[in-house]
Amino acid sequence: MKKAFKIVTNNPLVKETLENEYHIEFVECSYEEILRKVRNYIYEGYELLTHPLSGSVKPNETPYKSIMVSEKKEKLDPRSMEIIEYAIQSCKKFQFKSDKYAPEVYEDFQVVDLKLIESAIPSAIF
Amino acid sequence: MRRLELGHINIKDIQFGPESKIEDGVLYVDEEAVKAIVLEDERIKDCKLDIARPGESVRITPVKDVIEPRVKVEGRGGIFPGVISKVDTVGEGKTYALKGMAVVTAGKIVGFQEGIIDMTGPGAEYTPFSKLNNLVVVCEPVEGIKQHDYEPAVRFAGFRVAVYLGELARELTPDKTEVFETYGVMEGAEKFPGLPRVAYVQMLQSQGLLHDTYVYGVDAKKTLSTIMTPTEIMDGAIVSGNCVSACDKNPTYVHENNGVVHDLFEEHGKTLNFVCHIITNENVYLADKQRSSDWTAKLCRLLDLDGIVLSQEGFGNPDTDLIMNCKKIEAEGVKTVIITDEYAGRDGKSQSLADADVAADAVITGGNANQVIVLPKLDKVIGTLDYVNTIAGGNEHSLREDGTIEVEIQAITGATNETGFGYLSAR
Image (cartoon, rainbow over all chains, first blue to last red; front, side):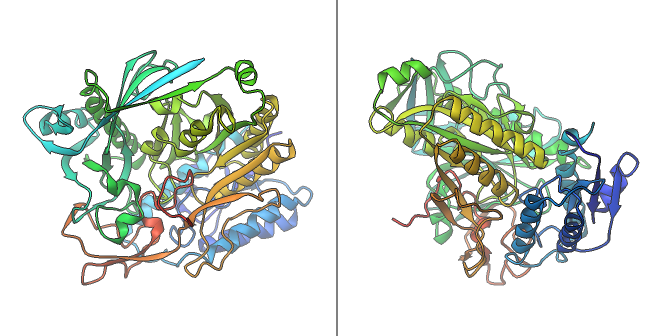
């Protein structure tokens, strides 16, 4: 069954592009903080709907991350907990360089993150 | 029985010349003709061609795709069906491949564009493409074009050039011919009654811009897990639209020359019965992962397989598909070997994958992508070094004043390939 969802993101382009159609929760924070925020949601009973490490652009390489979770709380999902914990652990394996790019590169990272989360929407909508 | 003859046309050198032709193992390229083929797409403003030979002091970066030119000489369809040739089932008849060379597409697509191919030095030992004569096509986008419009332009340009060069071999006599024979499910079971039934399950990167793969022209994220004859991939049935994760993405060349397919054919009829090639995707939406891995396991059961080899593509997210596939296929009683690579940190001490399960008890690794390497300054760069400090595995200090580059091997095209198409080995 498909579920109503919200997208937790720190990507301003996701907010700008999708907020008129979907529930976007925009937070100004780091990639890893988005993962931790989503972990808190999961422990409150929200279901993880997209993979937190979507895309092969590495954590700490791209500053942007958008993750889809269920709109409503449900029962605790152990698999969601497992996936988000692995994702948070993986952040420490990559050198932090999210603040080292020329301005136009940030736009590229935003576009790629937007396209990754957009690729999930056809699977998620009713 | 289906049969594909794969003729090898050995190319020992590439040179520019007034007419495109293959003569005595040398590929002569009419530069203007190739440029015209690239510039057929109005999204590409300009292109430059260059040649990089094994052992030359040349660095190619940033690399988008690597493609082996092929031509369909007999049988249904053409190379890259649904992409360049019309949709038709391929994998039978006769195909010629230009061996010892590749078309490499390069140039900026995004500001963190990845991929280094060194033709000499320590970096060359990490990329299988350093051993090829490479015709490099460096493309430049028209002003103001969006990344998602430009990526397919470069992708298709590479295929068009490869098909143009492949056609030059149509009337030639191959230096060597390999023959691949496959059987129907019942036919194979009767022919090889005592042999274990084995399939290859290949996971295809399918997550969105710069992370896509196409099967007969269809975006793999929109497909369900399905079955192919293992020779179809040799005619370009699967192509890469993937531009990130240089070390562990599968360039089109790797699909055409998939080592798992090749090695299973080597054992076909001797130690095992190579039943089929199963393909599945790696989507972002978790329920898609659930569905695709359910289907893969179901197909393995329906085909009464005894064992499979499972390969991955990419970092992070696909680790979950890998484990879901492995766990479910093992639960069907089908023995599973997985091929992956590792991000184990620069010291190699971190958890290697972003998922795990006890069912994954037979694992082959392509290497640790976080391993650090210093690449010497080379005399010539094809493309640009503008992105070396921003590519995955690099940092702001990567490009040093003396011209050397300190990066993780994940920056090198093909370094830790997860079909095993690389040089890292414990042997």
